[in-house]
Image (cartoon, rainbow, N blue to C red; front, side):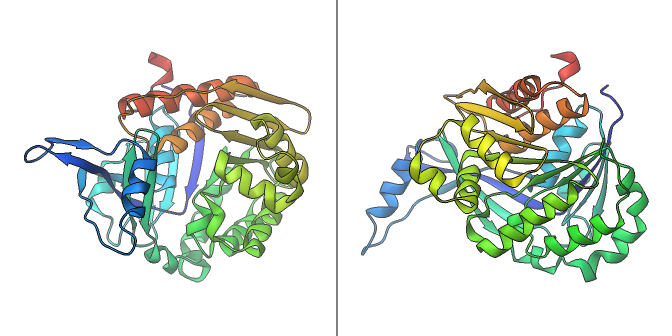
Length: 340
């Protein structure tokens, strides 16, 4: 078993339908060839402009979804004790009854739905997120207040899927006001593709992260696309001057401009991390025939954060993150570090 670190994770929850797009069908059920590349899928759609087309989506499985629940499952797999507060259903959907025994679930609303179309080189996440609009401070303040002492005592606070949680800023501000100061404990933020949110909302979130730094060691985790979005928001000249910066340079730039404790950025080819005093990078992986890709980023985050709780150096955090994530992509299962 891993160390008995305690973790709070909020506030999303989804039911994920994992789908593949059919290229050619040879018979019933799984007797088909799938569309392997996103570009092929895009061309199929583009060729239908002004006409129409039919694309079959084949359901592979339905499983627990949302950044929070997936991150919780990955962290709990290594023995960490998790309080998961999210949109798990009212009453809780039976799918969430299968969460790890290390997870204490607290449901605050109905789950969103995601149709995840998976390809060999990535995925398209088609989400139905309107149920999450019901989650705002007025609706969950009593639940938060009841659990404030436990939340404040946790070694790690994880705030996930900010983009889809429209009222998360006011919830985070409420929590910040009630947190005790403990800079040895960690607050982690996962924006989850903020492209669709207006700049003023993202800037308000950046200000919140800077405020959290007064009370917790603050970490922002980004994938490459998200990092480019944030870098452009911080200073549009950065990418204009260097359209393809190294992940290290990108990571260092964001950390320096945001002035928060730690930033990490990951891609299939490389990952990097930067603090006020150092930076590091590790070569990535590419799985030619992935078992699944939906949840790979959450497993990367889990590996990184667990290593951080263990006070490992930056490079070791990145290495562990890739190890957890690549194993998940190859097998669809969590890797237990103690028995690897």
